[in-house]
Length: 350
Image (cartoon, rainbow, N blue to C red; front, side, top):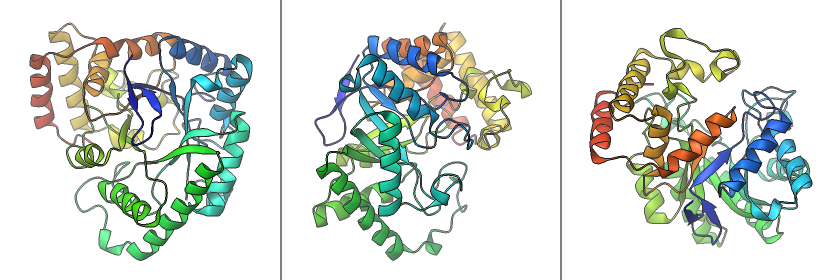
């Protein structure tokens, strides 16, 4: 297992991160504990969760994922072995703090509740789940879909300052060790860095965004920003919500799979003719080189030097073992050339 610093901090994270969002919906507490046991045994020291989870989001499962991690900490005593990341969501579902926007009051409520569920005194990496203004992710990344001139920059800058002041105080109080962003942009990262440096606040350590063979919009601009500014890039959905496996081709909806649950609106954005064609093309590349397509897709992420840690997720132990095993695969230049050819053909399949 490789380890890297988390951004500008001295916190060492494994370059494979255990994602947890299915726990409490597709996975039971016992299965969650089994995954954590195995991941730690394989050298993974980095777990990612959120107050919103489980996914797909439901009021009756909100917070269960953090609770399962908390009971594992209590049972095993392994808190000091894990770099724990969680997230506070802002303006969203009314059952989470009445849909409150990110700010001092929201963050104080969210952090307090997360710490209680997680049965810990601190979170290593506390992340902002998404910006409070329209952002070009989750199906809004096409040209012209967001009118950036309609966003109040002064208002958002003031919000950034309040958030930075609050998070810096959390660090001083020992409640978190570092903070990060999620679903954010080069402007968002740079604005947080600019304001932190100018005002003496804590600097952003990471940004967690969607990235996969089907979704490479953060190349090259955010990638360059992260490298130049020493911000760890943490990709999620490296298998495009499982679609790169091919299990959803031709309208298939396997029982128990995420797209079969009927609650995840994001499945529609990924279910396009171009995405289906791209998945078939990547499957053909994997077959050509005798590779498992999911392991090939993850190895592609693990092989990117600008990526800090790739977040994996699994609903079965076989999937988890395969996802971790992919870290030991080095894709040849021939494989990478073929992948690039498909990417040129389908640069934005959804």
